[in-house]
Image (cartoon, rainbow over all chains, first blue to last red; front, side):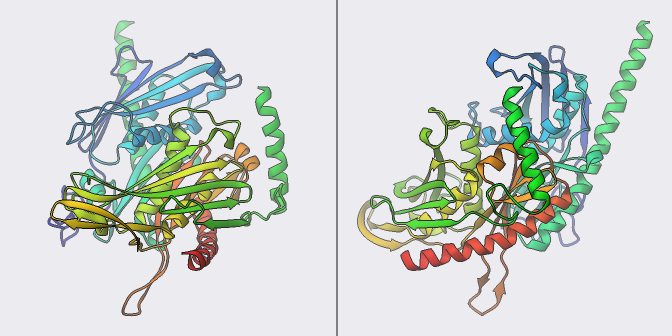
Length: 244
Length: 280
């Protein structure tokens, strides 16, 4: 390897400490047509999520009698990565759409809306590592913005092993050149893991250590999500006040 | 709603039995179904294996073909894993392009094999940047009676472990293929173990009935312990994980699943190694 990803004094290539998250800024309700929306700048990740629904199911036979159907599409814009990505769904995007949906489903009170559909559309405008985690965390806010009742927010983060060290919030270069990547999504108030994946090699001890770090990282994301929610609702209350 | 009543009844039965450590098919919670492996089942493939895990039946065939490398790895061969859910394997399967379940299964199996660094792709280069060997690993799901991921991963593993590849002879830029049967450069024996979570219990190697009522599943792939040339023993590692379905696990349950899967992976690896030794 030519460039070192972690310096001798433990600073990562982007200036972060081993256990430091990238700057994360969530924004809610920026789209007019979607029922709920949220946007995140997470390091150099830029991700926009729009939620449509609960709305009538099309085609109708997909409708479920006792709960709403939840669908998710994780999609990368052709210009989101170094080399243009074909807009057609790749096998990776098909898998990610599935695991992202499964990560968000447990948080939604789907039984409140039988026979309807909630569509979660995720557009990765710029990708910089851990996009699925950023996407899930942002989608949870978009669902909240749509007024959909939730058991909790879903907060997600990835840890990785880079040059022998376990690092928090894996960036693109660390994912590509590092030894492993382990994303997790978590509902903090339920102590519930809703997504867990891993690739690359770690020892049995490191695996357990990663799990503990992931929980801590998810709690930090949770805090930022709640701050964004608070800011958004404060703003909407004060603007309503002016209208009245 | 009626389509959920039968599973709800079954789920209660499964959970009640699990309270006393039992399962509907008579197994204990940490017991896998009988594992039978037959290798060399397809003469025309360079490697093949049929796995019967209980009644779940999966056949994998490996074919080697000369192709072009990926631009970013000009000196490496390629491994490609796909899965075909044959329509007669389950009333739920339909004809058509791979759906998300088949894509997920192929990618989970691929990740386990790839991240273990099983296949040494650096030894599959013929002409750098131009010609490399491509190992096509095609998984055929023939009978779905639960836990497709483990059956598929084991069959792909055994097919690769018993593969023999043709020889590429270079004459300038011309490549001729000789039907010599050369050993494939392999370095590991990664074994994946899947557990289903139902209620607060974990079930190794879930049956179809258990999968239909499970909250979620967790699959973990373990690499083999290795002895270095100087005699030092490098313990096995973890190389892949996938949670599937929309239920939840606590971090403590993940750790419990990890310990159970670790033990089971060693049991299955013993079977794999003995089959490969006698038939490889």
